[in-house]
Image (cartoon, rainbow, N blue to C red; front, side, top):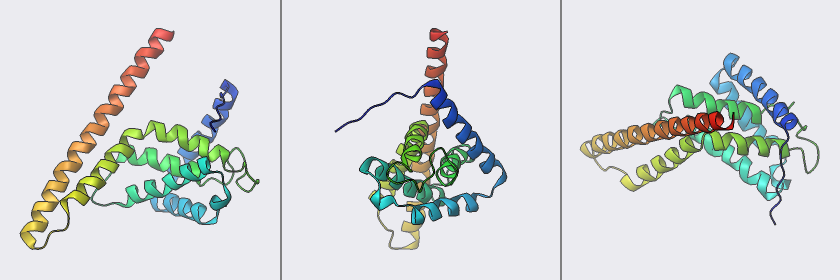
Length: 183
């Protein structure tokens, strides 16, 4: 079954306020503290009791933490801040609906995660492609193979991160163009 709903401007404003709190946390907190808070939330929230839609979004948080910690991926700072903002919101115990409210406590987290994941979809897609490329390269058996593998993986990472940035810019230009048309 598919359930749809429409967020009104006031609803969106409340999400923006919560997101601004998350941005302030990112600005004044250490990355490791934000990641630790997200991990803590993942361990303590009643995720297994949550509806499938919510559980699916929350499991994507695990992948985002892995992406930040993947040294070979070396996510650039601009994109890191966007991912950290998402994690800061997720781990905020004072978000729109308290997380301990049965059944719906994680609904606002899932909605915000959906909205923010759409914003960073090119980052997530590039990282997924990077992981596949790393897997396809396999393990090197000797020093020369490790050097060649590292060089190939770095080249692929650079290509994927460039693609990620191009797509983000393309989307921003398209949004600006449609905003100008709507005005």
